Image (cartoon, rainbow, N blue to C red; front, side, top):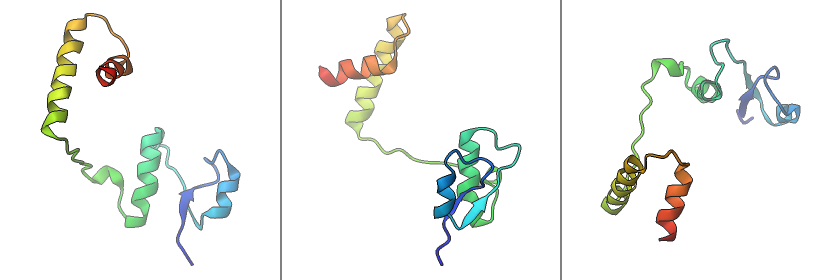
Amino acid sequence: MENRIGFDADVLQERLNMLFTTRRIPLRPQDSHITEQYLRLVSVPFGRDYREMQLVSDIYTTSEDDDAAEVLLSTLADAGVSLPLWYYLADQVLA
């Protein structure tokens, strides 16, 4: 039988989810943030606590992406006004 992992019944918002999981992971008191909860869920099958791991990731971008980001960041620093990031991104995309 497949090992389908999910949250324990105590924390489920949708109880119907229990029908589709075969292994339910209880959360600990220190797993209060949603990020900690998901990290706990994905680390249990490996038999390790995610707090013992160094989580790293590389995001690969092209040099054109890097240049566009530099331009965007330079305009944000000069704005003097805090506007949502999507406002600046939309301006760059539509230009």
